Image (tube, rainbow, N blue to C red):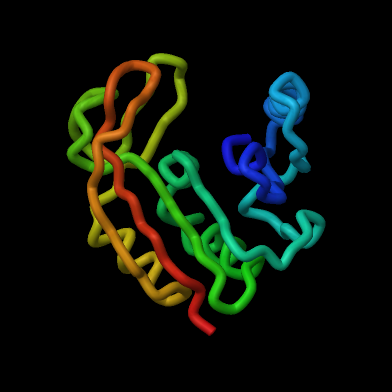
Length: 157
């Protein structure tokens, strides 16, 4: 909604119909135009549209476990034009939240997240993208700040 409020055409994807409905209502309340689609990012995303010039993953990747990650990254790449950019922000393995150690951690609401190292994300992204910048940043969260992997990359032609 931030990008839509600045004039960008935005398409949001979530597998939860309830989340999509909340997003639609929030966009309407804020007076921004967004397209929201119920879809699983691990399945065929042909119905999402595109190709797009930019993909933004804000804290989604840590919900996807390693066996499914390459499929997800391929799906993102397939939605982008040649030279399209992708920004991914996900929890870093050194983040102290949700148990503070280990790759798999249980959250207070009962979900399990996977905390990544920068090296494993570089290996995941590099077959599909040229990585422009990768950094660990401190970002705000609902339960305090988090250490996050931030990768900015461009689709390999």
